[in-house]
Amino acid sequence: MAYTPTVWADRISANPGQFSATGSVPGNVTLTLNDSPSQAGTAVTAARMNNIENELVNLDIALVRMRCGGLIY
Image (cartoon, rainbow, N blue to C red):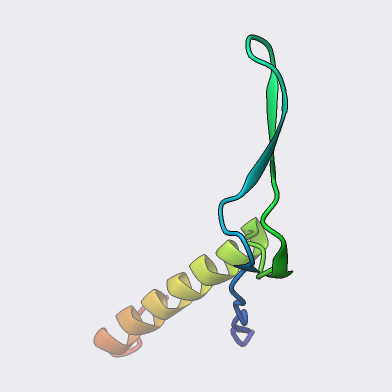
């Protein structure tokens, strides 16, 4: 099966690293990312990472076969 690369997009935000805090100290404080993204970006998922890993394995196998003259079973 042919490798299908992911087209990665950056997350673009108006206020990088800005959070809103709710709660009090002592006690629980909840931080919520509040950076107003104009572009969400590509999510890093296990499926996308496994796609990369699997292709690296396929390329490694192909390289070993090329070096051994195709005698790998």
